[in-house]
Image (cartoon, rainbow, N blue to C red; front, side, top):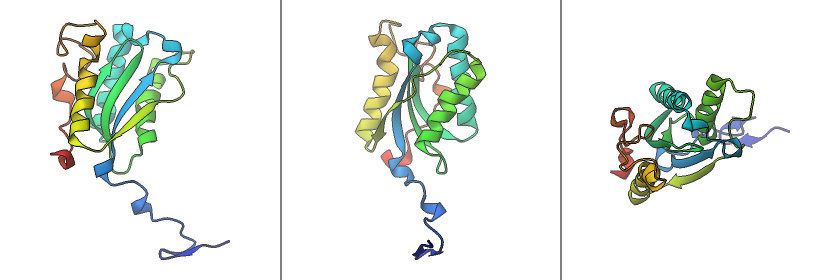
Length: 165
């Protein structure tokens, strides 16, 4: 069966319209390690996650606005590149880490939680929540002293998306 659309016979969608506009593509994502294993309590593993985030950010796969690497989970605030889906971005992060770790055991729970961030106030609240997470968990006395957080690594963080300014 051939579909006839405004795009022409046989064309089901316009590839240039496959992704939502950037104004609605900022997300707060949380991912948990398999069985809540305290994988990132080991500095080598936490540093590996820092490398993964930096690697894909430098490749332009996403803008990284905030992150925290907790002992058994991560929180990330990002905007995928215009041609990268939310799911692919999470795959870069979780899959990129798992591949480099080379563990024979499951590394992550199969799913992740995401919240679409549509307003400046929500963006600021998510960033604050992420960066204060280690303080609330008793892992540091200030957000800036926690080594595995964007509050500590200001240089590797992208600014707030322009549509929130």
